[in-house]
Image (cartoon, rainbow, N blue to C red; front, top):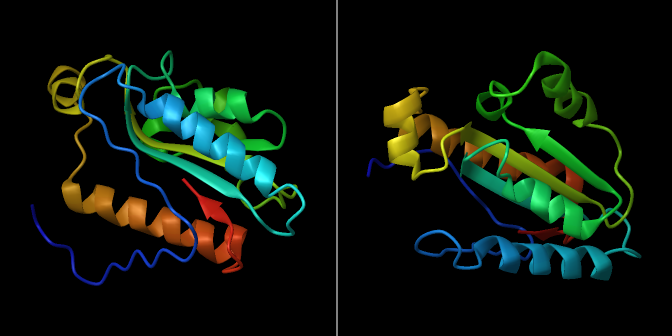
Length: 164
């Protein structure tokens, strides 16, 4: 794995990374629970938000972990797509996430984001082999780092919002 110099993922709020080997082991279920509890806890805290970030999703858009988190968390959810994921949707749909970025969100809101996505519901390396649209590791690490830092800088405002 190549090391990319100059990128700092200075986690400035409670953060959780959910790992699991294979499908149907409960990663999304655990993420839904963490995001829902965190958003409920933050409802009365000014500027507190929860950020669910799905860097890589296969089986998209039919299978969207971010959509599942959004449905569990209810109202006040803003869904975003990275450009790579948005390529899989129609032009009308891909404009929506771009419009909501930067809008002031209600207290206790949840922001979900899918960055890179492929339609085949297989492991990412197989999806790339089947569909193309490969992404360099350095591009992915840079995009992930920049988006997480942007969340902390703008949405959480360094005041202790929760991240997932």
